[in-house]
Image (cartoon, rainbow, N blue to C red; front, side):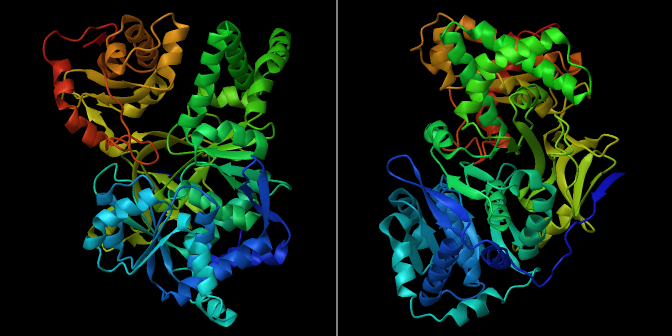
Length: 610
């Protein structure tokens, strides 16, 4: 086995819990602006560390007054907003445990999370969230308190707790030690029924303290700020939210991605947190806007120059004079506008959940934005590895974080141990035992290390396709580059026990009319019409052919079908972090898959539309 470890850089404190992160921050910088709240006129209103702390204590008192006991589970169904982190810390100060519920969850999913966890209360954000909960409330007799944020219930709670003494909150906040449960987060269910991950206080405390040192150029620089827009119900954004409190990062929130660009423009963050699909969207929208304005060739030339420039820089090679001139020109014409669109101050972006791809990594790098790809799961409290400002390789997910060890098993599976690894699956000892080899958590992902200890993800163990000819194929190697095409929404590579590899394709409904208009097609055509449109099929063919060039002939996609539908959370085909639910898609679209294997044999040189 190949193993890389990075020693912890902060001495462990097994008695500490997550409340200490805020207490220490108040002691260090009480007047620091820790949050900015959106105002009606498009501006931002400051909240200092002391003001946040006082609100946390007031809400914790309200929870105590409402009968919440230490160890009680409280559900939270709320989009990304200031109140999410306020509730998170207030729950810890009251000695209780938060159980996040995705704001997009169906009533059935809400019932499972709350019943399996044993939650006795729930905080909901909107009337719509309440309606979904209310549908299954009769099946949840343990739920005795229901609060709705949009009805002002947090303020009512705080007012009701005014008589709870400070000493009681201090007593409760000190009850938990590092090994105690801090939160119960349910997996997205992409590989079956969601399992509850028990994350401890040490997972948050030790990982935040060590990550703040490792990422000091990102989170510990004076004036560091970030605008959160991905869901805080997911561990990725949740960890960054807690890390930001610990490190003193100013945080704003914008859950509506349609308002993201205006918010970035006014908030002007220094770093971003996003999944690759966001970076792809920014790139694709920019390219199609340029195309619509008759500047498509300029944009593509600028992108080509950016990638070449960054590739040479990373390799430590000299930049030719001609490229220097082109780069300077494109910096004024193209790159500067993209930087301005993201607020003008972004130096770093942390990317996770799926591979970004070298092309986009180098493109953004030349904009002056270093994308730090990382790798982790709910079970590892988000990051296990991440590229650092001082130690980065585009295309990899970086070295191990301080306090973390990663090894590659003989079959290529990634195993993790250290300060970030969860305690167990809630009430599921069989799944827990199956997921561990001693102290090592078996991730189910496949990867490899280079000589410098940088990890590259190569696929998922359970997703490996074995063709009828015995060829092992990792779907991600084909899916990721195809998905980067502006026309493509999602890609699902299929072919297990089949004679060749095929793919199901969905179109991106936002980009489709723009692309059609730019390519002199009817921008108003439906998904049904677009699925059979020759120009659309030719563009998808080009994307597949480009992906096929990166693999052997036996691994290449020989047929594809464009589906006249979308994969969404609502349809049950995507997780909240936009990962595909492969097994469900394979079942739901089995007829379309079988149709690609009946009739004419696969072509040898290229894909064909089925």
